[in-house]
Image 1 (tube, rainbow, N blue to C red):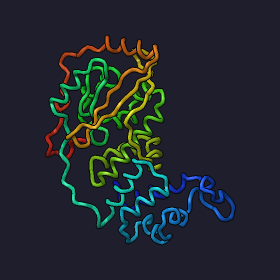
Image 2: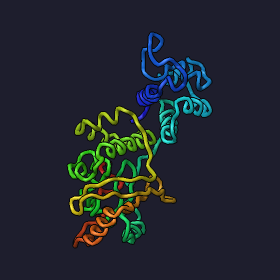
Image 3: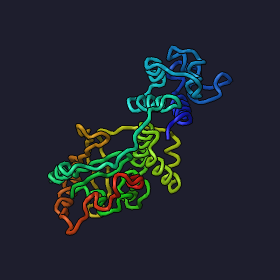
Amino acid sequence: MAGNVDLTQFLRRCRDRIDPESLGLPERGAYRRVPGLRREEVAQLAGVSTDYYTRLEQDRSITPSDSALDAIAEALRLDGAERAHLYDLVKARPGRRARRATPSVQRARPGLLRFLESFNDHAAFILGRRGNVLGTNRLCRVLIADFDAMSYRERNLTRWIVLAPEARALYVDWGRIAAEMTAILRLDAGRHPDDARTAELVGELTMKSEPFRRWWDDHRVLTRTHGQKRFHHPLVGELAIDYQALNLPGEDDRNLFLYMPAGDRTSQEAWRLLADWNTPAPGRPQPADDAPSPSDDRSSL
């Protein structure tokens, strides 16, 4: 997924988005025929030669030091996620890529699943690699979707948000939410460039969703730790939720998400109605009931 093409596209898009005028540089005219910064301007801001930066952007024979990458990140005004992505892409270049073991199937420990169900006032779920849904509690299944009732392949939040008509109807700001999920997937793809399941997921979404193709080509990367989302819920109508994302100690690439209602009266009342609606269905399948064995390459998106 990552490599020389991704590195080139990422750096070009980072250059293009910077307004030269904000740095005291001419914005238009014969001097400037392209948007954003030119390569020599990035090199000057980073304190490296133009040839050095050009070879990096074109993925020619160069092994940049961490200090040089930090300087380029500063020149391009990269945020934390973008800086991490730059490092991931450089490490994924031919000759620098470490040999990776075949990833095992991610699952949530039984203790974590019981922990999720202990939340009565929060919708809670665990996301793994690529946005895979590893576990949910009852309120989450009522608020968003019943991922536990889906086939193992379909239990992916990114896939569901981008492709499911129910997601378009649920999220008031669907375009923003779907674009953010794409950017989060981009970051994951750069961190794990040889992951065949990520390639399969991206391929499916690229074929089935024209908006996803645009967002993916933007090469935006993102992390989300907290925020607010607006819902138009089929059961209770309009509400806003505040969310927190927490890293789980000792659980690599797994994050706990907690949703609670915003402080306004409409959201609070809608949330109480959802909680009252929140009764367990008999015979509900467990999250891993239909999952293939860890040795099966088809086991996950």
